Length: 397
Image (cartoon, rainbow, N blue to C red; front, side, top):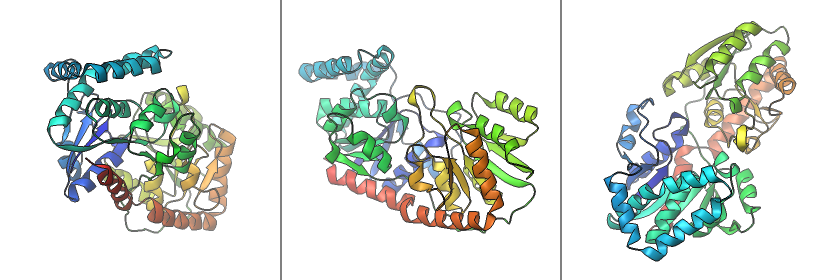
């Protein structure tokens, strides 16, 4: 089957599941392409095993020849095209910025519809419920081709406009957590019977032994250096942990990088900022760490985590984790069972969780072992990608 995956950004290091799913589909013998709404991200680190997918990425200009031809093709279906524009305007007229962005993707979505209608595309799957799902919905409205979409995190929290209508037109809606399933089912008009929980996942490594407690403790944060990631809270929490010395490694980039470096220096924290690193380096740092901390909190406009991939990766390595009680995270990090949770944005709660982990190290290691078991059972990318592919092929044209 010819499958088109729709995303906003491509390739994107924080969305490794897109590459992993596409690789699985290719290995299963399907013809896969990745349509990205925004221009290709040339600055991303692309690993050799993913190049076969990256080479299948494509887009159209906002108003280039292909997009203009797509618009002309859509105008040949005046009733359908008018309904698309009418529904977009009706859904987003109270959100002018979102309306403008939605209308901006119409030409290239029409180009995608024109291409998909003629190249034998059997199914389109949007990896996010926001603009990618809007593009998939436009294609479906213009062509009657089957489409579906995934609901991850802030893509369902930022706005509900058009969300129920996209779901009614979709063959199925994939939620990555029970939290997301409940959230979507509570939206008026949302077809709850179309929601299926199909989790994300990671490649499972061989388990390695957790290092014994040491002074200093080696702590790791991996993620974007943005407000919603909570690195500022982590830095503020470390002086409250007690007299246990901690060496913090921070892997990632973002606009808060200089501010966080200055904050760490002012607090006298031994922190090393490594910037962006390839996957192999991240995994190496995880294996040498005593614990991985993911102190996420809700960001501006309702932006929030789903279930961060870094937690799955750390737990697959058998590493102790501390995370925030936010969104679907407690389904993976069950407090006191597979890791420790803290209140989002609460420095004292975060410091207490770190302190508890250090002071009861045998139980911390036992939680890490149970955490790895949970990842193996529920977050194996091969099993979960296969489950998603089964749904896609079952609905394909």
